[in-house]
Length: 170
Image (cartoon, rainbow, N blue to C red; front, side, top):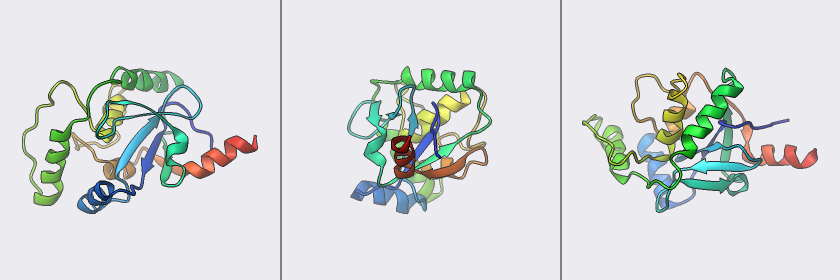
């Protein structure tokens, strides 16, 4: 049985042209990251073309996979989600996405200063984990969804579809 808890992560295999481009450029299975909030089935995400906000877990039932960090305490989980909730309403950082393009395509790391504390999907959650002393991707300042998937601190526990099926069985 897969039971998700606050601050667990959902990594998504994209289906749009932009998602596929991100996956190809990063040589990753994933193009998007979201995390579990406090309410059952609630995700919080930074997504292109809209402000950081809420999403239903069911939105990723066909293309999402669940990852957990078993070393988190309940206090850390609460602090992580609280940190992410402070970002709700903030805009997606397209400049950081372009920075990632340089990193992966040209293998260059150029200086980057975040404007207005904006985020992309993966940095939203990686920074929230860092706020409680858990660095999912040591040495990577702006991790991609693929970087997060490779974290030694995370364990893949199944698909979103399996998660939803186990909830409805009980």
